Structure formats: C-alpha cells, structure tokens
Image (cartoon, rainbow, N blue to C red; front, side):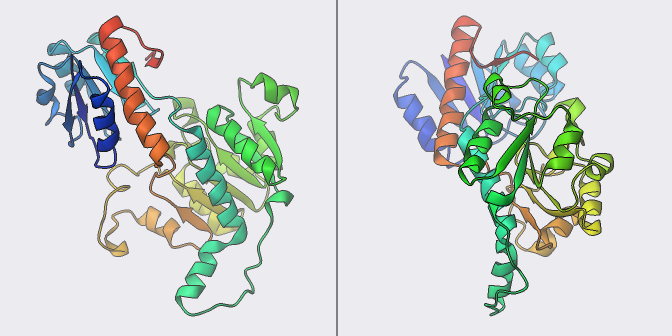
Length: 332
C-alpha cells in the first residue's frame, strides 16, 4: 500500500515517522508542498492521499486524483468546506477527516483568551514595554462574575463549559440539537437571540456551514448585551469582520479574541518580516486595538493534537483503501 501525505510540516514529521515505523506494510511519501494543481501529479501510482491545507481542493485536483484511480482522501483536520463536493462524488473519492484531534486544545485557548480579555493583559504588556508598571486605569474583571454564552455544544463547546464552570462562571448555551445531559441540567436557551442578550462573553464553536456564514453581523450584534466580549476559535467565516469593527468602534463590543479570521488564507502562518508588511488593513486594524487579541489559527497547535491529526488521518486512509469505509468518513 502506498500513501502520499501532502503539506507535511516539520512539527508533523516525527509523528508521521512514528506511524510508519509501526506500519511496515505501508509506504508513505512525505511531501512538504500542499496538494494543488502544481503538485497533484506526484500522487500518480499511489493508493491514497492524506492532506491538510486551507487552500481549496478544486475540481481540477480531484478529477486528476480520480484519473489516477485514487478513491481515498484523508484530511488531517475537521473542516471539509474547502472540498469541491461534486467533483469528489463524480470521481468516487471518499473523504475522511479528524473530527476530534483534541477538543481540549481548542477549548483551553478559548478560555485563555477570555481570561486575557478580562484581566486586560495586552494593555499591561504594552505599558510594560514602555516602562510603565502602573495599575490604573486598567482594572480587571473576574470570570466568576461572568455569564458565558456557548454557541454550539459539540465536543469543544462542552469542554469550554467544563472549564469555565471551574472558575465559577454561569454558563448558558444554544445548539439546534441539544446535548441530552446539558439539556437535563438546564443550560440551554431557546434561541440565539436569547443567548446574545444574556451573555457577558460569547464563545463560538459552530461549524462553517453556509447557514452560519456571518452569523455575527450588524443585526445579531445589535441583539447583544452592551459590553459583550466575543471569542472565535472556530471558523473565520462566522464573523462579518466589518460588523465586528463597527461594534468595537461603538463600544457595543467590549473586546474580542480571534484565533480565526475570514480572510486568513495566505496570511496566517506567514512571516511578513514586519507589522507594516501584513497585507490586510482590517486585520491590522484589529491587531492594533488593546481590547482585541489575534492569534494565527493556533488553537489546534499542541503536541497532542498534531500527533492525533497525523496518525488518525493515516489510520483512516488505510481503512478507506482496504475496506472502502472509515469511522471518520465524511458524507459530502
């Protein structure tokens, strides 16, 4: 069996090598470049493809894989919204993802950013860089006094709930398909509007479905409690960036923490050499604010998560090749 793994980073290589050592019957080619029209020909004569990227898996790429007889594409991440689903179906390509590489990794960063906003650490760090070690006027707030609204209660959302409860925060949540345990505990509100108007902190953990695109917009921000703080460690497309900026300018939104950004492709995980060279005016606008925290899509980036992403994807690809099925197969 031969598998080609595209976009393998240096931090992923040890976990790939570990997996290969434990599967001597499988040949794996490690390709540092991403899977696109320029690299797809390297997949010829392989049985399956493992990949991870923000770039689109285009019809051209998928048609070429289909022409090579490749029917198994395993992603090392959760999202499949960048796959041309019709092209995959047309070529009989089955797709798997890694739905839960480490819910704790994402949840822990989300709560870390909540705490940083409440304790105003960015402001203090800036003052310290200028030799200012004073306290006032940057007095903090406490998590135990907050109502944290959790939009979507899948694996990650439930982890967030467990963590903030440990701080003594009140938790409310919304999910169109409630978790039975949380429902029994009385956590859920009936509508997103109710979640927005009663949350001091709103944390998003919804998938990038078409109906969720720009779910945070001028209208929904208007429904929120004055002084709300918004956390997004899910998908950049959930937030209308212009509406977020307007909400921050007006003071309606007291702070925001974004690990994802709707225009992040080609920007996050790139070293531009200096702040001035970052080619996105809206992103720089947000980065310059002392009540906004930006991290470049690093919520997943822990040793545990990266190992699981690599090895679970390889396991799934082997299963798809051998049996035509996998417990991580995604129905496109």
